[in-house]
Length: 159
Image (cartoon, rainbow, N blue to C red; front, side, top):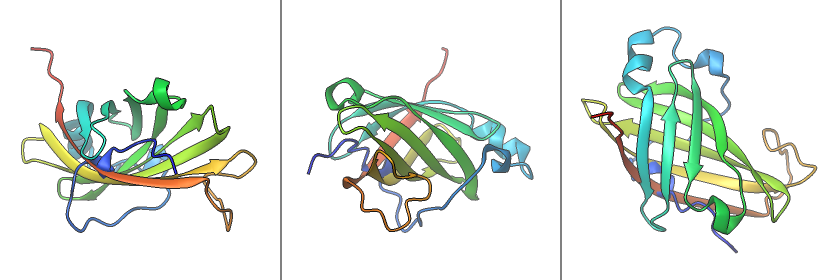
């Protein structure tokens, strides 16, 4: 079994439950101030693998994730959505195309921020589904493999 992410589920957040489906319209319509505090780009490191990532969280509920492992493991940039899941916490779901296994990986994250929203910790778990399986609704289809990890990161600042 090959592990593609190692993002250690966005850094060890104790006892945060994984989350189901989202749409970007659900991001945080009831708490726009929270969305503005969360929005930004973060430098993230996976605990087990040391993989580095840039995570961009938008105020409108979208996320973009670029990984240092994309070239070596032959997968594309990840895109997805987020929603508030706690006082300083969000749940995210991202997906990406896997080029060597010809499938789509779907990854769920739980992330908690420090009080200043400058640092984050979390956990992710995901699975790669073969081509022809709807990765957002795989039913009983078996994934090609599953993966998980913890992550930790900090906000990028212009100065």
